[in-house]
Image (cartoon, rainbow, N blue to C red; front, side):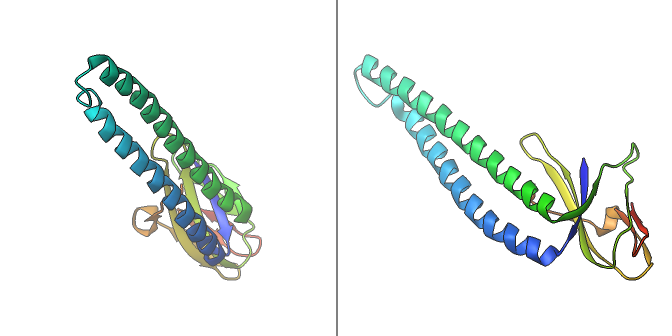
Length: 168
């Protein structure tokens, strides 16, 4: 898991929303293509009274389904990498949690932030986020069990402003 402290969460939301809309459209188009091809594949062997012709059509459709599924996986991966790149661009700090899941950010300047934790990989990457404000030398401890929100990004914090720290 990687944990990011991101400044200007509103700008990130705007950028992520715009990119997300584009990616959702592309992914949905590819999913629909896979579903349509699977439907054709299910009917392929009954598509002709000539078994040889039907078997050839079935084989051709199997290859098309595999290619469409690969294209869908690649598009999903590209969208996830793009989302992580947006977070990386706006991250003012990043860290990894220790063995007990705790982490901290030091020398956090006053301002509004979003803490985003991402565990990439697999078919469904896990992420969560939390927004917070840091004022002066304030220290803030946030309980992630009640304060975090799920995000489709593919956000525990103890925050101190100025030369302070943020920790979970």
